[in-house]
Figure 1: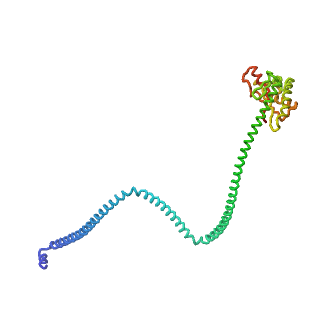
Figure 2: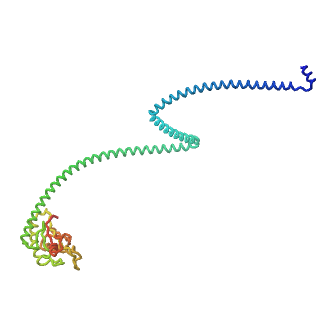
Figure 3: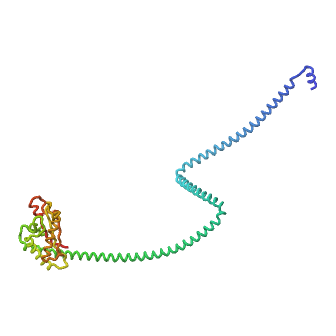
Length: 342
């Protein structure tokens, strides 16, 4: 060192020592950094080696999970329904959870205000107890009323059964009475038919074989000209003479027919289709009715019981001949006598 100082003193200012110091310092720094790098590299290699091992383990686990996943995929079809049920159950559980949570929140909120509402709740509880007591009393009354209604229903069912039984018996009796009535009516009809035949036979013998008086079915048909002038409803003397014969036959018939047979002589008035021109009668219907009434009134005046007579007017609506000749019109202008039931 002394030699160095001596040389520096001899040659002037010497830079070499400082350069060497700086260079040595730099080398030391580089060596330190290399040491640090090596240490870090060592730890990094250790860490990377550990991660590689962990990665291998993870790959192994992934392979295992892949196998398990394959098995799960094979069983997925059979578990589809269970998954659906579980999902439905989960949705229901979530809804129940939300409901319970809402209740819990409500209870929590109510719990915060419970202290202040305790008195009100006690009062409401007392009121509910009173209402419950009244409700129980009403339930008891209703129970008694239901029991009474059931007893009444049972009585009504018994009465209904008895009524149905009586109804069946009544139906049987009605059917029997109906059959007997039909037999009686048939018998009466036969009797009335017999008397009608006798009446018609007697009228034929009384009236003779006049061309203006004929039998059509079960009716005696008189041409209107026998009794009335054209457009009139007043009986002519010739018509009165003919009606005297009919009245005598009816009087005798009324004595022969039993009272229980309800018979009548129906007098029907008919006109032709031509409209009437008369200040007395507005239509053919009025004229036909007036003529039938005139015949009935005359028969009553000759002793025929009025309850055995019926007057009816048909106007031009029941023609015997649909023609438009004078003979057709004459045939349709008529008075019909029919012995029938009332």
